[in-house]
Length: 269
Image (tube, rainbow, N blue to C red):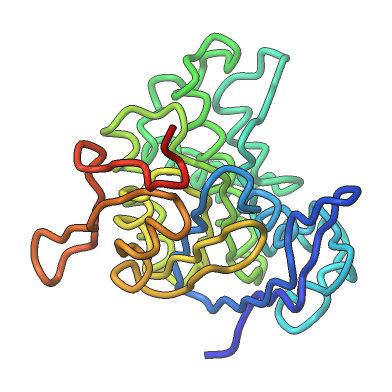
């Protein structure tokens, strides 16, 4: 299958500091990709470059074979939806209004059906008439997630490519809603969307992803299936952690147990 999103020799610099260093990646429809790595590894920076929100100093990003910079904002919005790490709304829009924003200028009976279905899927129907400023952090996160899902659906209805880009989407969510969000993301990928998400929690990344890209100091350390990337060697090399990644069975995703971790010597006092 041909790549739908490609990053070629991407470098991002901030003054004398290199945030991304010659990143080469390609993604195909239907992938569920997790970007992981320690603080400052370049995960959020890479996501912003892939979304077209940040222009790299060197290299280019191609969307469906065409350079990202050639897309108008409206056309870009039809192809990819982005959930940023922090979204601040200070006006008391209702939850339904916020979710409806994902439809952009589309206003039709069909769009309203998508909004209602998404509110139901995210367990937000009872909060639809509430002002978003009155909600808890987790409820707001789910409302904004619903908004980008509506954007994805409306874009696909117009022939968009179906790409979801999310920066730490499970932040502020309780365990039930974390697992629910991962299930929804995997469902979208199974339906053909490309889903790329930044995670700090390696266990959630392993549950979600069919592919994990590990970043360290702005470079790709490894890229592959969860069982190929979440290994004891990677944990020591990238995170400075001594432990062995575990698997319940041969067919399950690898997981890490904080209770068994110790800091590697280079992190010891």
